[in-house]
Image (cartoon, rainbow, N blue to C red):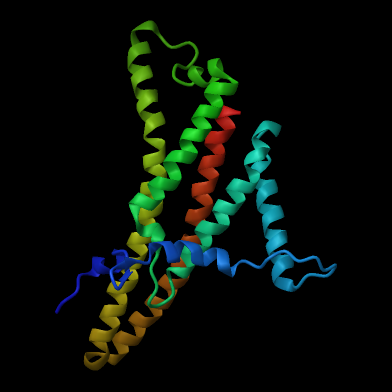
Length: 227
């Protein structure tokens, strides 16, 4: 039976029970817990340093009202990074390759930033729809364009994360299949292809971290416009 390359993106099941929930809960089990000891281990110290540095960098352009989002955005960043990196291990499943999951994260968070802007500064939030000094004949067209661009933001967030991770996984599977096919026929070419596969894997590790950062960074930019 020949399997499709896209079968790796199907939600795994065991005895008819979907394992998506287990894949989503696993990252939280891997994070070190805070302890009451005066001295912490290297892993906890590194995690605390990363959270502090990332939160300071992310909240720097946002005013004080938006700092209440810092814990949510930092937790989302760590959650996405862990999901993306765990999905690169053999015999694992990457939940963030599912568009439904990414849209489930993007739409509520984007909507929360929009509602925050409408509640706190209604005039300023609606002012984004029409730039100052717009000629009168262009006003209806610009309002329609800005409204479409506003509502397309969560779709762009979800599709960007899904497309980058899906493309990377497909490339890795295609090149690894080529390595196995070429091994008995052309061992030298197979070894060169294996080097390309190793470099691509390093690239995918970087992409997994960068895409999680971009997802959270764009949410922070949407928040910055509305606080």
